[in-house]
Length: 457
Image (cartoon, rainbow, N blue to C red):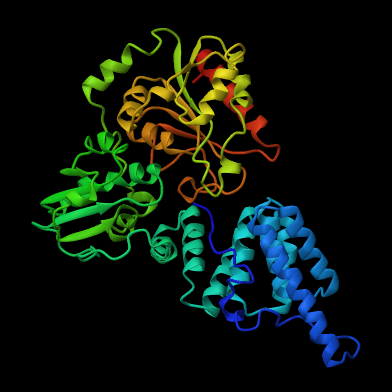
């Protein structure tokens, strides 16, 4: 999950009363009241039309109108902020930072703009400066949940878990996924003889990653642990030690003593990088699923599973997913490998389009749930994928996984440097981006495959 809180002019709460506060003031030449009023009205129209263009997805028109507004009044901090947000959305991070700086010249006490600039500084890999901005935003506005959440992710990405988990809790205010529940939240109270309901949040991969904490909760004396999830995850979660019940229908829930978010468990259990519960594997596969998929898999060659696209609704999907299956073509230059596509959804058709040059066994359309995914992955030699739930399935099963990470917006859990992950030690290898982009990274993957086939790895 990426940074949140790109505050637009309509969302800068401290400015709602007077959204044109910086328009028509401190003019170099005197203006009468009517001139100031006309100018303010025109600038307001430009700002409003820019906003509307952005809302309907016409980013070029929105940019043009913001720039026109700034040509009229280069001291308009709101317009600089909003133009910066637009540029940031388009991946133009250096340009965005310059406009955030101009905005802060006019509005130095805006916590929202400092939060915005910090997110851009992160994308430019200027982490120390980003941290300064986040902390300054919180000095200005201590209750600013978005800045707390973003600072939490920055700290976690640096491995500073002891401090980071507390800030990361602000996501409950930012997203409000769980709302109000008719039972108390578990904050570390004695669990001896108690029942505990675990709730997922965010994506499937997050649930798979953090379900590892169930056995630790049992060790603390929990009498019963239930997990609520979507049906597609249920077959996998039923194999986890410590999970007594998997609930897919909220109407079927029974009373519990406490509830807890899966992603709050590292805070409650004081997790550091060194104390991550990493007993691998911690998920399993039912025998009947293994048998069913065994007949579908190739019996010769090195079996390598592929996924090249993640959830398209993810805010960093444009960076973390490949545009097309054909970008993986260099991998087919290595002989002796049988590629299996585990890509689900519409993107799997890309593999069908490339069968002549990139032959692959396409199984994504046959996969019903994560129980099927796990049964396939458990019988592979290697998984190569972008940052999506499949990486967590492979990691939790202890199957070798090569994870291709994006150049910008890398998720906090993979940290900023290194080729391994403390969450999946021994079986996860991280391929990090070069400045030249995906082609160079895929060449690295190809060379690593060649090494394997030569017996080097």
